[in-house]
Length: 78
Image (cartoon, rainbow, N blue to C red; front, side, top):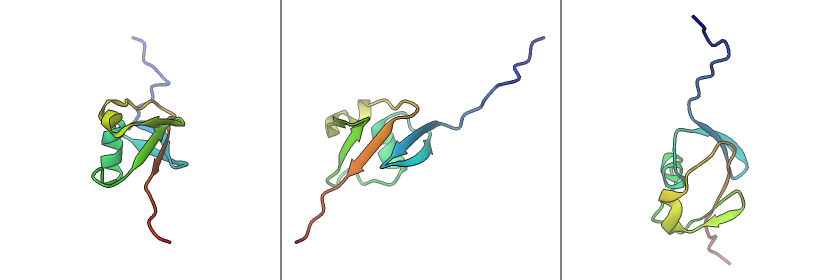
């Protein structure tokens, strides 16, 4: 019987959010935002690998290992 010696069990994807490495079990951008505590009802803009993702596509944007995600919100003030 062959037993794999290099079996790696992953607890999720390794991605970056605003330059910080994180592990996530989320499959989509929408799930990731919820998991990380972002309020999707607030004004947010997101990009995956430097490509803007419209809010209407967050639930369809499938995450891949190594994705670089930027999440920004407007700053109000003078």
